[in-house]
Image (cartoon, rainbow, N blue to C red; front, side, top):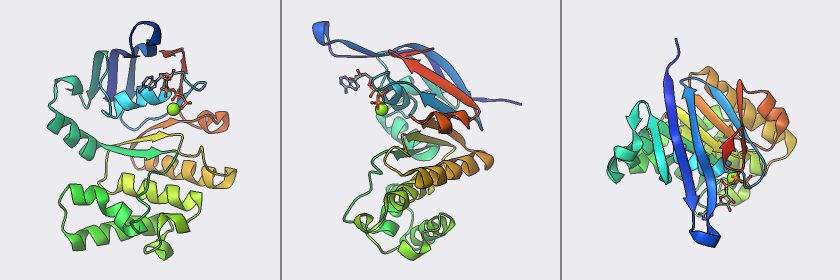
Length: 223
Ligand SMILES: Nc1ncnc2c1ncn2[C@@H]1O[C@H](COP(=O)(O)OP(=O)(O)OP(=O)(O)O)[C@@H](O)[C@H]1O
Ligand SMILES: [Mg+2]
């Protein structure tokens, strides 16, 4: 049985006005089922990140509706949107976005601090997940002391720590060498095997070819 987890209905995102107007997303409708691993590809500027930001409730569409788990995101208050982001969504970005003055362990604890989880439980959960991503020897390192591949695994641990159903990854392998990129891809694949829904933006046709479905964007449209 399939179940629509993410649904976009005639979503538009327009930046600027008049001469400066850019239609970043043009009338996109799509459905992503629970448990799917979907790749989004397309040239630079085709609207991939803008589209993902609509799915991730990081932005609001100019027109159209986004549904997560059948809940219409546009009808929600900012508090509810933040709650859905925290509970349902995990984010991974090309630049890792780790806090440089926090240790590996502290970075992974951040989402749980926001959820007001007790310190002991935070430490334990963060350690467990870092362990599973082969970072047990790096808990007290700072991001600047890690390789790119290690930093991205810390970012993945942080995305996973609240056990979200959906992982949104925007070019997570973009700053990595082939081997580290393959490892990150394999981690995403194993998360899919655990029942998570994965949306991956990538420039790498090899990686896109390994997912179940590829959405191609061109000039803001899905083609
Ligand atoms: N905040 C913004 N303000 C104005 N224009 C924007 C904004 N964000 C994106 N755009 C424009 O929207 C278009 C789509 O941008 P987007 O970042 O979604 O592309 P992308 O497919 O993710 O590209 P890349 O592969 O380079 O990351 C671009 O023309 C961009 O300049
Ligand atoms: Mg982008």
